[in-house]
Image (cartoon, rainbow, N blue to C red; front, top):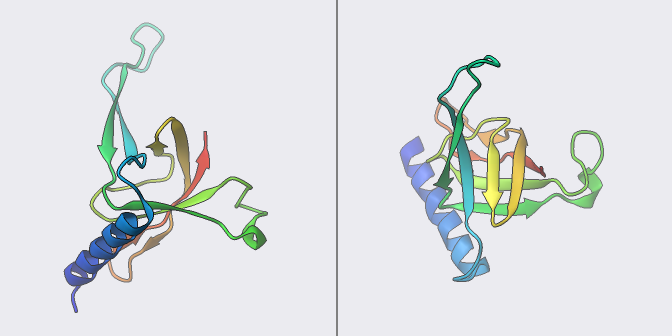
Length: 124
């Protein structure tokens, strides 16, 4: 089974989980992409514009209490989402009025193809 088949199964499984656990008025999850269109000096300051990209198959999980300590702090969550949108450390994830920062990028990628992202996120 190739990675494309596995990726399709992951997307289908996440969509099924969202349908079972969410509701029609559940807040959607977005990646906030930032673009710097200005300069980087006091005379020519940066102009940063944002674009919200919907993470269609995204689910938040809470960490088990026994894992809190060290790099995982109380309130941290794990986002599980498919590979359709590239997620990187430092990105902002938004759900409703809550913004999260990506602290650590967990991913399942047995080859160079990412199957699923599982980043650790923290409320900003």
